[in-house]
Amino acid sequence: MKFFLDSAILPEIEFSFRTGICDGVTMNPSLVKKAVEELQAKGEKITLELYIRKILKAAKGSPVSIEVTALDAKGMVMQGKRIYKNFKAANKNLNIKIPVNPCFPGEKGKEFDGIIAIKELHKAKIPVNCTLIFTPEQALAAAKAGADFVSPFCGRIDDLLRKENGIQFGKEDYYPAKGLSKDGNVLEDNGIVSGVDLVKQTAEIFKTHGIKSRIIAASVRNARQARECAIAGADICTMPFGVLKEIASHRLTQEGMKKFTEDAPEEYKKMV
Ligand code: G3P
Image (cartoon, rainbow, N blue to C red; front, side, top):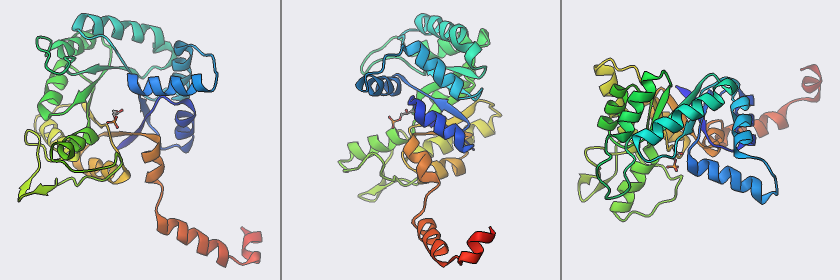
């Protein structure tokens, strides 16, 4: 499973590529907003376009997803083509992030605009990462339309299950892949018992039907969830910087380091 960084913060991106374990970057408008606000708070004056170019350069040709903001198929296709044309030279593995369905809560009539946009961009040979996926059937529809990547949002499914059942939680808290039980029943959303289960069911469907779109487990909140996404069959896990750092850590590693350092004889230290 590949590791992508889910961030628009340039120092995080640069550092992650330096580690050698980062294989790509995903961004969304909320992450871009956070990054830009951080820069503004430091008094930096940089245009968003220049900033994105720096991110694309830092990714050294690895995939980077940039999301559209339009809310209908026509607008998404137009923005997708424009982003691709404008930034493709800076990163040959650029892909366009398209929401599977751009309707707001309660809104109707545009349920297929994301799918149509994916189809059009695919026809124009522009790679698409379909985002905001919460059911395997949304992933299947996006794949059928030609999405190169589909992004099921794990953490947000777990959040929903906890919220709907009045369970208090912190954003990074672990949620069991097999789900949580209440009154003898496993909590579920439309047959999905956890974010990892969403990835697992999607991966099973793709395997059964020979679908080539790659699954990016997104909205991942902790290292254990990333591990379970790997077991569930995700091709890629995109994670915030904090989760990437957590992946290399364990308290026994730290304790072991302390003991080895204390025990090492001076002669040994000089020799190595
Ligand atoms: O890649 C999707 C991600 O940015 C959303 O994560 O933690 O806001 O659910 P989160």
